Length: 611
Image (tube, rainbow, N blue to C red; front, side, top):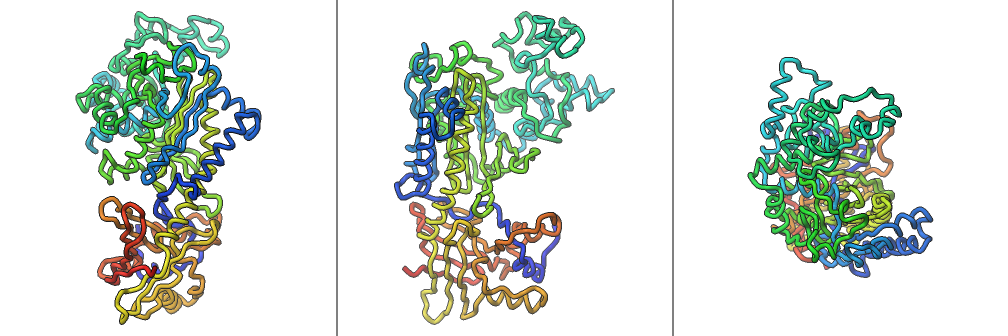
């Protein structure tokens, strides 16, 4: 990255196309989620009203009504600061669950569901707690002897199209779905060669040749002496030996491809690296420290657990136990326990803050501009409709058998939600996606609005120096309209009787005359939070940026980069004694978020808010 000098800083600082803003939060996270005066609580009530109407045959139409009525589901909110947010829940039980032979006939926050692929997130989280950073770079060939043997066997005749480069795939790669390996392998995959032995017409439909089933089966230890799909005792080493010679789907690290097999292997890798069984690993890393008393790595077969479990199909299918698949989709839990997991991530309860921050980052991108992938986060880039601000939503969706699941954490707001569902008709995923869309579309604008309102209450105002002889003050406001760029607006900033904002503009015009002077549009100059250290020091650091509501010019990707990319152009480019002149540090009450003082470190001064 090139060095931006003072002149370049000023040009960028006042350039007329700055729009996108710094990544991250626009305000400190809202603390009031659940009270009657909260925008979020009002949005929640609107969502539950729509759900009630839909269940009654109105609201989201006949299709939506059918999806919801034929699903049993539980959903709930959680917040790092508002413990009462966990009481904002909604539950529905379908007729098939209510009248079922086994399982619960009542759903609440402690009702047990299979969480399907949310298990992948739980598995990765356990690994984050137990492993060192370097462990994630361990090649799979260091863990699985059959993969090392395969690499040695094929080393004299490398064929990247036909042979997976197992020695180039790391533990971290499979946690992020970038290993390039198949989604599933036998015996848990459906293979036409095996299906064709039972029904030869299947081969004709696809125009495939007659398979050599004996040779095919011999490749897979888990297929020997069993009928297809019935082996629940297949061990991870046997499974890996079977898939070792499968062809790759991508080169290692090249592109994301969803892989359940990857998480079968991840479970074995975590067990190998920690020397613990996965049951012990889950219990010691997560279940016990977080008090996840209703989260299980084995099916809830005991009567006291089964009676609180949603059984949407049959006991045999809903409680199937194939141990190698547990890290991918075999964990059972409740919305209460998943909320505890979400809060612990937001709070860095089990991880150092720096590791949490690195975990909550994308690893690769999909073919959709709105989606990225992490380990194993499915990251949705939500664009606020009123002001085009982007908020990253970290999610994990699950779907397996009769069950569907969703866990969402939103670090910018220290907030999240979870939805669990089940259906005997197989519509559970469509149902929870419908619910999640309604919830997101209502809650996200409400979170921004509530954060704005609390910033006005806690941070906006006139800040002055205690000493009368020093003419220094800062006036902060918040946008009155949701359509304005969010953040604390600096409407006035005087230091030692100098108008700081006006001086910046004058300096710019003097150095670059063809750039128009723009001191009048003070609403473009704002500060946004960049470092939140409330729990430890009770401080929040803000940085200044400028925003032009006209936005970037479409079709000018490279020429717009240094204008739109405020992460390049605004932070710490102009310093005094190595301290950014545009840094503002608030000292706040750890419980209420209300400000005690405002420090301007470069100016070596502390200001207090006039009450």
